[in-house]
Image 1 (cartoon, rainbow, N blue to C red):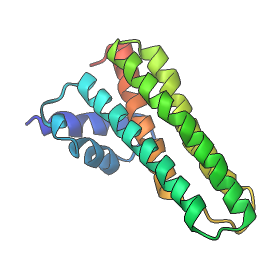
Image 2: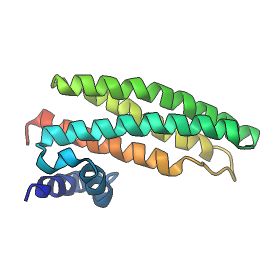
Image 3: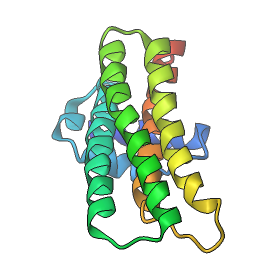
Image 4: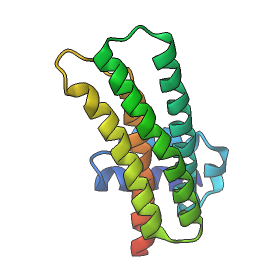
Amino acid sequence: MVQNLVTETCKTFAQNDPNIDYNFCTTSLQADPASQNATLQELGMISIRLINCNVTDTQFYIKNLIKNKKWGSYTKQCLRDCFELYSDAIPSAKEAMKYYSKNLYSDANIQLSSILDDATTCEDGFKEKKGVVSPLTKRNGDTFQLSAIALSAVNMLQTGSN
């Protein structure tokens, strides 16, 4: 019965935002045991915590890619750019958590939007040169979707439709 909140919330999010995949939403939120008894507000915080873990892990992953692989100069520059973007996203995620926990939803929204933009900018950098394939497509997509999920929770709470 309680998992219904996750499934119903994800169904609403996916219907309202074409960038949110229902299965990704439910799988991500249900991965946190706290989601089993969570309110909408708690689901929002869970999604922000997931973003924080994701961006921190991705930054570390990029650092290792830069060190360990023999990339072309363009790809290596894109990876460096992405490293900077994810370095910015880490404090944004922490700020989003802080604002969200204080019900400062518009401030949380700004931070979450910047993380979503960072993931998009990272991915787009690879697309600027023909034939270059991003080694970060899945991670950028996950960051983007987690941010969209958190933004949907923030927007729902802001408008009071919980």
